[in-house]
Image (cartoon, rainbow, N blue to C red):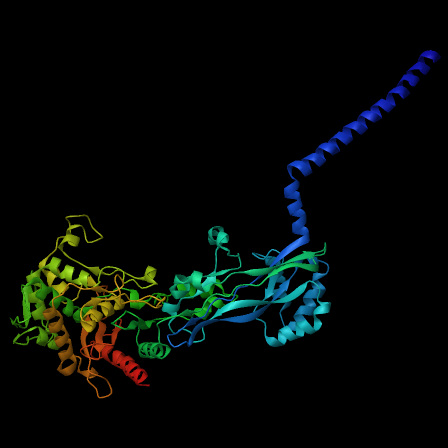
Length: 596
């Protein structure tokens, strides 16, 4: 038994080296396979991860280009601001309370705010957390004096958009906002960063690629603590290009001023020869600096975007009932159709019945037997009822089309523009845009309303300015624009000849001149202005609100150098009472500027 037992122990001892060798080979094989897996199959990926821990890219903001008026005066610029950041890799939970206390005492920041910002995390910033923004010069100086003892905190420079004139021209200029994550997915390939801001509306959006510039940055090597060891590469950011507009700052100021006491409205002033917009104002308005604030609460956003007065809506490019300013279009349709030539005389009266309604003249009695020029001068409804009903909805619609209505004007910010509406019997037969075809026929009452710019006609102040430019420039349809872009705006297709007889054009122009000389627009016939021509308008609001007031004009007569359209939304009392004085003030400033 002893021998047998001794033999078993001897055999076991002999097997142990083999087992150990097997285990060593097994572990060695596993290590070789692991190394092969790491280096051969995932080597490039792991090298990239190592570089990420060793190399960082620090972005440098581009300075967005300025927006300037026609004389080089600054409308939009950028301003530098300082922000306080925390580098989370350098500050753990144990060291944070001491740093927080130092920052709070040194810079006058509540500890609770600093805690909240740290909890919110880095967000789009991979390596730092913003603790405070728009620091004062005193805060920046205090930080720099004590920066050696504030490990893990840094103050850095940011660039924000600045609108030095506040709300002036806000709808034309627009504003910028941070890009969304969804936008970043498509814009990253164009060089955008997640920290980028992008133009939302107006010129800021229309000329985004011109204004934005390009990011620069530094490639730096850092140690395990996140501290910078050396700079590996440096590429300066590229500033955006300045944008020179056609706007005139002084004229824009005048336009904004005349709107201040109105519940809503718009002013459009443009050059009828080439379509250059000199002023484009809308009320209610907003301050685009709101969107440049580093911190904005949801309550503030809701107050702006959900406001019942809709301050973000440009009234200059929204459609409304035009009232009697439309009568020039009806006059054109009558003469161009051949049914009511320039020498036509019609009997006007207190009211004329169409369908089941007697449509009145505004004075309740009519103006006797008159022609086009006096019909415009008196703004006779019954004269234009007869012309409009006589030519029919299609002829009137076609005249409107030739003057640019029912389609975009071509302005660069046209994505915000309403095409408007000029109803006609075909449109009615198709359901008027809200009903089934065949259920809303065109009726005589529609035709009467259409003749004087009511109910089934809705146009924008910008469209009306474009149409009146045709009467001011000898028959050319221009393209309103805010930036010249080095183009000749008097060449086709930017300016085209309207198919209108010279006699039609001359008759309408003389009628508009009579309006100012001795008609409803006499308030414009003042010594400090050149001779002008225009048309007043008082329009019922088809949505049920108080009347709108309009005035469209050009000066000097007969070859206009400026067209002004003034629109006072829901301001009852008449175009001559409310809108005409608005246009007059703008013309006075323009006249002073051209003489200086």
